[in-house]
Image (tube, rainbow, N blue to C red; front, side, top):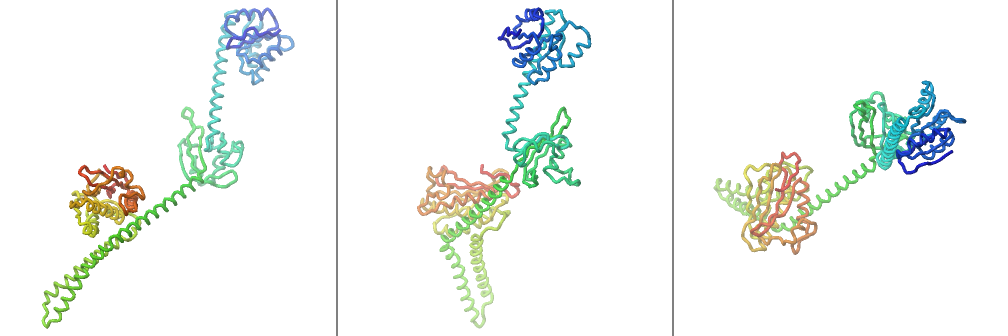
Length: 521
């Protein structure tokens, strides 16, 4: 007899007994308890029902014809589909050996005949709850393991699980792909023998060794690891200890092949070097352009001391032609010749210094000296634009760390623009060049004019390449200035004065600022 009595419950109980009366008693006892009840009167049918319905609890009679309860239990426990069922033996036997045999075969409990209803109800309830919780836990574990497997399989970095001796216990697909062999071929092998040269004298210093033996986390980049075929590759790895209640059980290693990454970094560094070379070339071209624009003025500057030298030389010759030359006056005249030659030499020195390509590296610079040198250099533009330059430097201003040629180029460019703007506005107010400390890390240098100012729609584009507000401008001056100042570790910008005109500023790092960021306040 096989019958499904109820199908609207969560917990399934299988009743197995060859005695119909016993089955009826069990059924009457459990029918109102909300269980789904299955009934079988012999072993084969019991096994079939158990395999198809996976009951939580099986009340199993021991003494049955053809196949007794012991054999049924043994076969239930041997089948993975039914091995987790709670088997409660039913028997009139009350000897210890029968119970021991039942428990040894995987039985969970024992109920003696004749049945006591309350005992049957209590034991079924207890075992049903236990099995239900165990199955829910197993299902959750399978779900977590499935999630874990999906995560590990989707990660592009190789992952190893190592025991305390460095033996690989787990390897994800990415590790197998990096190694160039199936994951199962990696299991059981020594991580150190597989990936590194394990010479005895250097074993203690091998990567991950400290994690496996001492529980010390490690993180290294650009180390050489070996593949299964013996070829090497640059790698980055992180290793963390596997701890259980404070006891070390090995390490988890995450690693990746950084060959492409290193190649990209090298290419990026080469591109940066090329860009910097082009920036330096552009800056040098800009200086040549500036010098071409100022050539006529400098010719006049140099011509003045040369003319004076010529005149003083003629006077000296006339004095020496006399029978009794005035040696004191002759000495004074020669001193004037020397002074004018120094003046011409200084003009040429400034031109040559401005024209040369800057040497590699930066120097500690005195801001007052730098600005005064720039002011003298701008005297040609000052005369051409019929303007003036007023330099104001804050007391006790610290030295800065920068390239003198490039900084002077920026300052000169801003001053020349200011002089041109002042002339365009037909203003006689001098251009104001000032320097002050800006926080603890920077010096701020600004150039303020009272000229025509900058259109409002041009402010955001002033430092963009090829943008200009001049009719004949090329739009590379301010863009070059920004590049040069950023290369010094400073900042450059524009402010609109309330009284009109324009104010351009830039910052430079203080010489002892130790590489900290330098920005205007």
